Length: 330
Image (cartoon, rainbow, N blue to C red; front, side, top):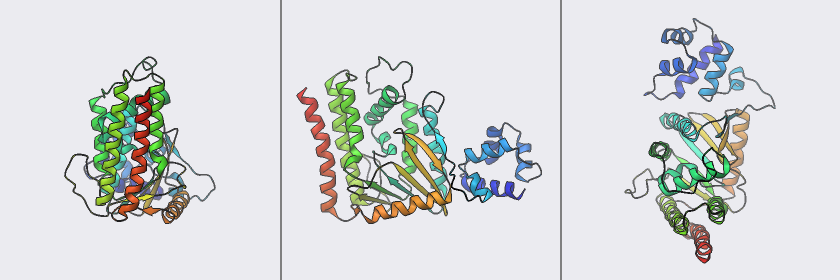
């Protein structure tokens, strides 16, 4: 019962005030409100399957609750595709978790970005439309996409869901680590789709290149101000809430370390967008130490260091312009 009491204490801390905890647990476990209250008051013991459902749903490490110290690390997988999440379900989960992070008094996100952070895709509908198409066409083949060509049409509900995620993300103090390869993935994807004949016309590929250039300029402007804001809106934010580092060689994967009120969660991407998630303290401490070392070997290009910042973003822009030139030559 002490373990059960601790579990509900942690859950209570993680759920935003605007979310009905009793209703959420009732829906999750398929039990009545009264049954939920009895479990929360420890008048009724949780079954093992209920315990595991709660841990998975609220991103709580069972190892940590049992104070287990082993070499085995438990990860939860969040995968898109057949037998996994749909993209909409994936975004809904991200939205749920990022709201919890924002509600915390002390919070921070460190994002080592081998690829462009997914949150930003939904600031530009053209980029969001392309990424959704690419994921469904080449990465997670879905029925109906075999002969489908790219279109800038994007499901409105899906785009607004992505924008909600971004709205919360830009309010959370964050550190991002980029290098010259961060832009490479989407450049290769656009070129692959163009060469493969997935665009209806050349102008569509060129339009994505132009939007990518706008995207790069917007990130550069945010780095200059030291805070994030929506593209096309008046720059407003807390100075120093966005720190951008440039690292030349050490970013080998996409890793996100979240700290909220003293607790840590690591998100590690695989297969481009799928996630492995753990709250294992030892692993999160190792990731934290590793990211700290990477930052020490990096150049801070937000706020100050205008020369280094301009040089870095000029390199990214030139890579997109080079792609645009190759497409124009076809």
